[in-house]
Amino acid sequence: MYCLVYISSPTREMSDHEVHDLWRRAKINNDRDGITGILIHDRGRYLQYLEGDEAKVEATFARISMDPKHRAIIRVHGGTTSRRQFPGWALASKSNPGDRSLRDSVERLVQGCDREVAEELLKFAEARDRVAAG
Ligand SMILES: Cc1cc2nc3c(=O)[nH]c(=O)nc-3n(C[C@H](O)[C@H](O)[C@H](O)COP(=O)(O)O)c2cc1C
Image (cartoon, rainbow, N blue to C red; front, side):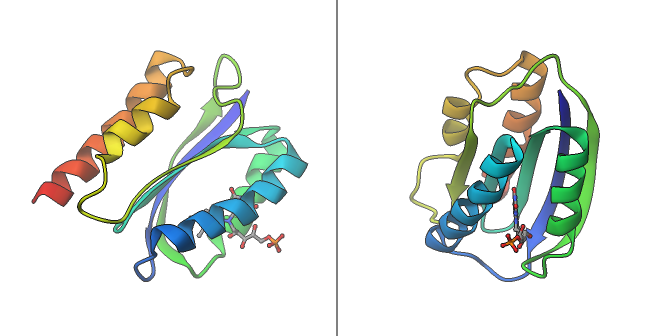
């Protein structure tokens, strides 16, 4: 299965509600294109993991890259995984300091993933929790 991971920074701070709306709109396209994965968000960063047909994933990433809602888009990797890691299109978001840690949210969603995929996503969430903790 082809997969792609990138990180970026929101151009302006997005509330959980706004990010949920963005995720919901993306789901319509991703369902159509057979793309699954996860969008992880806190106030300062996005990490997105996309998987599916290579041409579809690349076309989606090309669209996402043009979106002025984020900047400093860095592609972390593109390659293959042993199998589809996510059954659907997931979202883990933390905007408010009082919310559960990003790691906890991500951990629940990566239960079915291969260890190396889960670890990469958890590492990002832990780093963001450290930033949030100051
Ligand atoms: C952080 C972030 C993640 C996004 N993820 C997706 C995605 O997974 N799939 C998608 O189709 N659009 C995603 N978008 C939206 C695209 O940038 C773009 O607005 C959208 O694909 C345009 O399609 P439409 O004309 O059908 O609305 C994302 C945008 C941002 C800022």
